[in-house]
Image (tube, rainbow, N blue to C red; front, side, top):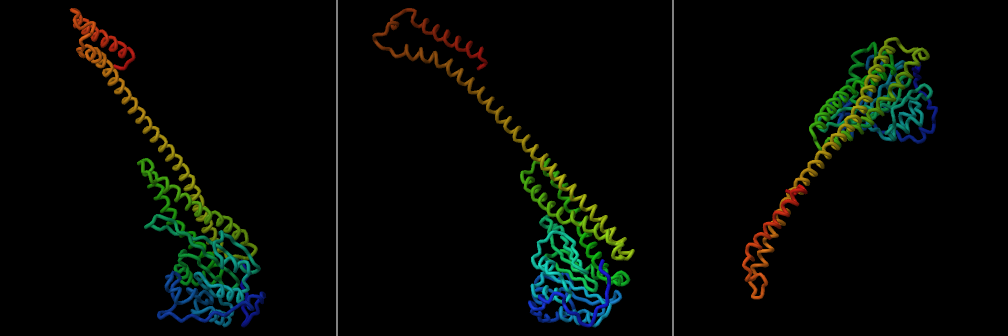
Length: 387
């Protein structure tokens, strides 16, 4: 990590272009009851500006709470060996340019912080670290995972957090660090590790919520819920985003661990970071397991749907076969009854000139003919299994 250095009363920016492009922001009006918390609502942010909270610390103790960036710079100049911790939420371009000019932030890092939608990464620009984190929170009402983006600038005597989204809530991090002055006295590196720990700890409720969703999905799959396929797909997409948020963190933390000896990181911070790395590794493995489980569930669901469709087709085929059998029987009896009807109809016309009209054996012959035809048709249909 960067070495601590004594901050002069005034410093010149190495990047003079930032100062030429800078329009100094006007200090926002102070809120009626002190500084707003890190989790300030969107309406409050509109009224007070993007600076959620700014504080200057010395030896782990807060010595001032400036109300604007300009006041923060002044207070930090007046505190040799002090540290500024500035929290921003969706800052304006002018605010980021002001920070860049004051703390010599690299233009590429500032550009990333302006545009957001960055992948998790850790980059070093001289004596400044630029860290991008993806925070996550589980929304119980909609059973969805909401992702936020956090950019962190870490320098020798400052730490700047830039939030794009509702998560994470850094109020607890600040309270935790202020309650442990001996840890906060270790400087911006300690705050960075606390922020990392907060983001990683925020993954635990998400993991629990997703595990519960997967359990419910398994029940729905075997219960035949037709809407479960869409739920599986949506949760799979969220797990892809979750994996993109967690997997890069493993390499980032191992990179920080590898720099312990080079930058003389405090032993307590080393243990702290290793614990965070263990949690990240565990979370990443769980997310990988979720993706595989959802893929397996989707396969099982497709198999069950196919089996159900096959069963329906088989039932329809059996119904059709039974219907055909009934039609055969009806057709057979209709043909059998049609034969005597035909004979009786012909001999019942009573025309004057009919050859068999005055024949003595005409009636027995007609009856016998009907019986022979009906019996023959019955035997034929019976052999063909129509009756």
